[in-house]
Image (cartoon, rainbow, N blue to C red; front, side, top):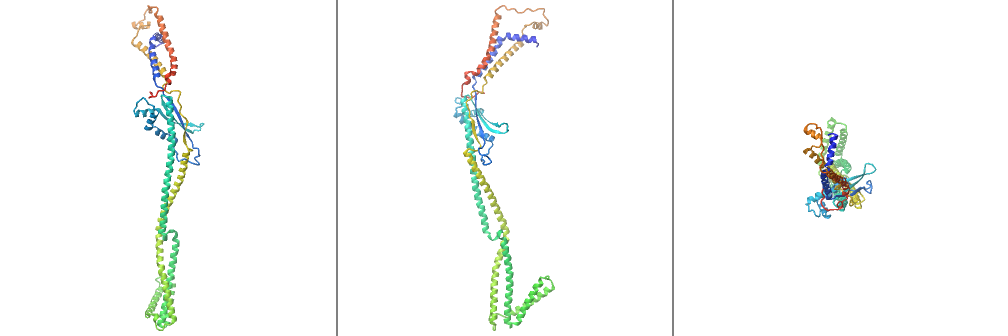
Length: 506
């Protein structure tokens, strides 16, 4: 299409403007009606700030350490439960005339409610305070503000109640833990004491002392054995002296004593199989046998006829020494056996006692840790009760908004006006395509497939029609120009500020 064709069709469109303004007027009127009939939607926003603790966390920490974003998610789930939303809708009569099912009410309430986090940067430092915005959409601005404030107050109360409950639960848990570990610590301590009392004779801390006692008893037994042999020899000597007149038996005893002394000295020098030791042992055995045979001949020395008083006194003394030494030996024997048994049991008792003590130390460590945590929980509980820790505060309550967020009436009317213009162009184009008419010499040439010699333009019979056409064109122009103020005034239509309680059509 060249410039001449464009000018031709433009002039033709202007000639038909009185008809083509009809779809523009209809579309604009429809858009205006829709814009005026749509119920307004107002959004009211409340802002909640996460305040930092008033006490330094280096000095005292709260037992509630939830992340603010996590807190927001928990609170949002609590506030948007089915029961909460139905109760809120009933309290504020959000749907008084629309008898909607509960599922639809919950869906509408969720669609109108928005809870979003907002980070407030501090002079570009990269980290800032955290705030929450709670908004609600309604046809009445006052209703939107009331519901948004109700959400905000419910969030503040739920957060405060939840933090106190968490602090109380933490304190109660560690209190029960301290009581439980205290009882366990007492049981472990009693187990250690009971084991020590039951095995007080075989404990590892007295092992060295008992070993010293064992060595002392063994040395004493050796000494007693030597004393018994000496006293027995003395008694035997007295008996032999009394039986034989004194000289022969005394010589045999002296000889036996010398041989035994010599044998003891030789045993420290030679081996057991040496000839000297064998010979000495043979002589000692023969002499002991001979002295023993002589002693058998004396049945009762104390009654022997002719025993001197000195010998009787010496014999009684020897008998008394022998009796005392024998009693001491018999007394030391059981003591030494008990020491040996306790020393043997000490290793096993040491293992058991160490296990009991380790259990006691482990429970003691857990108890001390639980006591420290209980102290921290008590501090955290006090912080939450006095509200000096991290908390939520309402820094900007919701107020009735002055401007609606829906519908955009100017955009709707302008869109319908543009759609009307597009529809008029479409009608004009379709008319030219499906109903072609010869209007120019070019159209006549196209029909006859040749260039005509001359053309005569159309002459109207009624001279008043051009004037009438001019009036129609002027009216169309006035309609197009007058629609501009309509676009500006439609936003101030009285129905734009009328609050209607009901479902919002979006």
